[in-house]
Image (cartoon, rainbow, N blue to C red; front, side, top):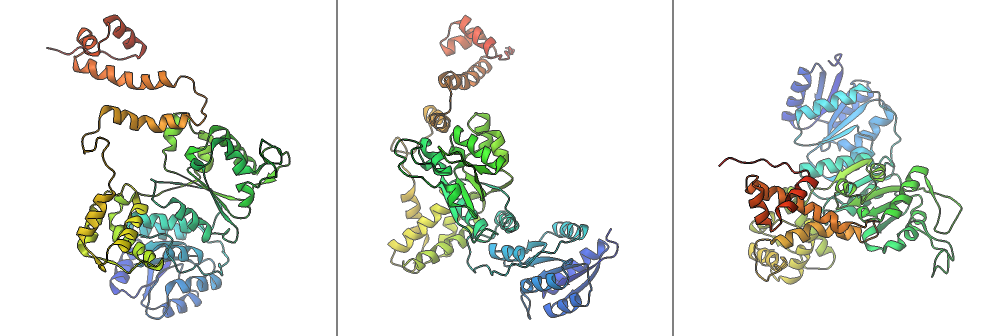
Length: 479
C-alpha cells in the first residue's frame, strides 16, 4: 500500500481529476486536486505532496514550465507529466526538464498506477536542469501508440550515452531517430557522423571507420581520418550494420570492448570518444544463425533496441504524416496542397512497402504535378497505381517457385559473396531445399517409398539413403 502518501494532481479537466482522485484513493493514496498551475505551485512551495501529476496545458501556465521550478525547490519530488499533445517534442521536453515519466492522453489507469508506484519507490536524485531549449520542430511525426512508445524511449535516451540499435524496414525513418538522439542529447554540441555499411566497398570499410596512415596500402598517399575520429565528442551512426563484413565486425567489437582503436597501418591507440547508434533492416538474429553476424557484437550494439514499425502498422498516423510532408514540400517552394477526406482514406488503404519515404515522395509528386489545391482520391489512386512496380512477366500473376526460391536466397547468397569464408554454399542450399521436399512427398504418398521415389524420379535405394542421411521420419498411412 501507499503509507497514505499524498499525490498532487493538476488538470483543468474536471472528469480527469475525478477519475484520478478515485483511482488513486482506491489504491490508498491521499489526493489533492486542482485545475490551476498556480495552486499546484503553492502546494509544492508549502512542502505538500509526495508526488505530482500534472497536465501540460492549463489556463494559467504550461505544466512543463513548472517542472524545472519544482526540481529546483524540491529536487526529491517526482513529477509525472500528462498531455493530449502527444508529440515527440512533448515527451522530449518532459524528459529534459526532469519529469519522472510522460504519459500521453488518453492514458491507461493501470499503467498510471504502476508509474505512481515506481515514482514513489526510490528517492529521486537531483538532476541539473538543461538550460538549452529544444527547438520547436518535429523530427518524428505520429500519434499512434507505437510512436508514443518510441517518443518516450528516445526522450529517456537523450540523457544517456547508451548504445542504441534501431531496427525497421527501409524508409521507416531510422536515421531520423538517430539524429533525434543526437540533436537532443548530451552530445549535441559534437558532430553527427553517419556511415552506410552497404554503400562502401568491403576492402575500404576498416579505413573508412578507423582511418589509415600514409603508405598503409596502395593509394594511401596521405593520412586519412576515419569516421571514429571525425565523430569525436559526438555520435557515430552505423547504418545498415547487418552488411558489415566479418573482419570489420571483429575490429568494431574490439573497439567497443576496449574503448580505443588504431588506424590501418598505425600503432598508436586512439580513444574512441563517440556514442554509437546502429541501424539495420535485416533480422540480425537470423544473420547470426547463418553465420553472417557475430553474436557477441550484436549484444554489444543491442544495449537499447528500438523497433520502428512499418507504416502499414500505424495507419492512423498517415494523415498527420501526409500533411507534414505537404508542408515540407511547400517550404521547399512547391505549391500549397490539401488532401480531401476521401484521399486520406485512400492513403490508409495502401500497403506502403516503401513506408514513410514512399509517402513523402508521393506528397512531393502530388504537390508538383497537380494544378488543383484540393487533391482528390482519383489523383492519389492514379499516382499509387503508377508507382507500383510491374510484374516480372508483364502481367500480374502468382509467384512461381523459382521466384520464391530466388527471393529467399538472394540475401543469403548476397551476404556470402561479400567475403564470408564459406566453401560449401551449393551443398548447404541444396540441403535446405531437399529436406522439406522429401518430407512433403513422403507425406503425400503416406510413407510409400516406391511411390515417393517415382514422384521424385529417384532410384528407390537413393531415396532410402537420403532418408537416413537427413534423419527423416517415415510414417506409413492406412488405406
